[in-house]
Image (tube, rainbow, N blue to C red; front, side, top):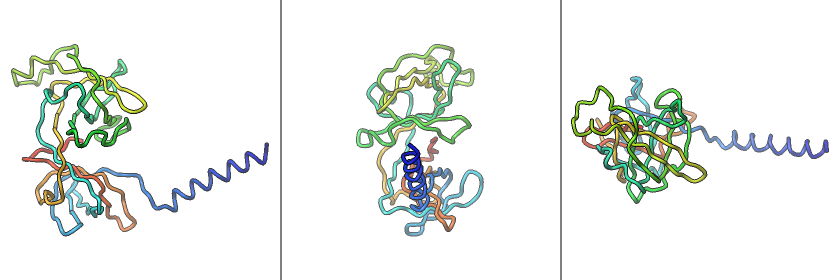
Length: 217
């Protein structure tokens, strides 16, 4: 019995050492505006005011976000949503990004997010949607949208599902595949990157805004 415990402890220690020695770091999020593009290096002025250098991975994936609306959130659509928990156990969406068919399955699942304290990100398929109960937010000024309090979505992903209420004032964007040629100074960007030993970031996924849209992720 003691021998089995020793072997198990040794295996766990070896696994932890392998993770450290692999040099892999936890992905971080960079949000801001592109300042310069020089080959594979993209300089971004972050929301906090500092300049961050992104080294683009050879297989970097670029997506473009354009303005959308609640009408784009349909049954069967694959979406991502940043949300915060509500007292009734559902999630309240801060933003929604709708993936095209060619990007279905991207980042599928549910995980913690850092847009706001306590926020989460869920990438999943809309299995059902319906009108959410309650009044429209008092800040709504668009008469057409104000008639809709929002939508309550059932989102299903591999291994689980979540109920998410999308209020009428949630920001909705549609995503489409992009490429490196669209990375230009002044463009708003959201990057998923890994911090390197020299302080730079290796970017593997970028989402950029179209026509002034700020990626809300």
